Amino acid sequence: MSPRLAGWQVVAVLAMLFAAVGGGLWMILRGIADEGDARDSVTARYQAEHELQAAAERFAADPGPDPAARVAVLERVAAIDPSFAPAHRELGRWRLAAGDTAAAEADLRQALILEPFDGPAMLLLGDMMAARGRTEDARGWFQKTLLYPGGDSLLAARARSSLASLPAAR
Image (cartoon, rainbow, N blue to C red):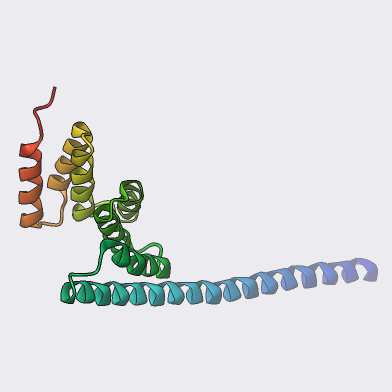
């Protein structure tokens, strides 16, 4: 074996070793970053849950604020954690009460994208569709609410009642 070939082999082995160590270091650093992202999302979720609970308590204590004021509070909650479905559902509820049906529908649909079995969001969409005269859409949302696996008997009773109040299917 010539010394020159052995030198190239050493360089090749060192290059592979460096790549392996560098790659491993990158994986470790990326894992730390992912852990930080996860910690940040957990913190955001906790903060959003806390803010939503505080808003619900304020709303219950003071039923006087108009829906637009409640929407402003809930927009801040949804901004804290955009993946928090209950914030979008409540935002949709209060936008509907404020008369902004297009934004309400978008919020309720976003809640269902984030949490597909959100029975209250399904029921709200059914109510909104019924109010708009979109009977078949309303019927579909009320039926989906009845399939909701949450076991909420009041929600199911409300969906059955709303479904029964719709005109007969054509």
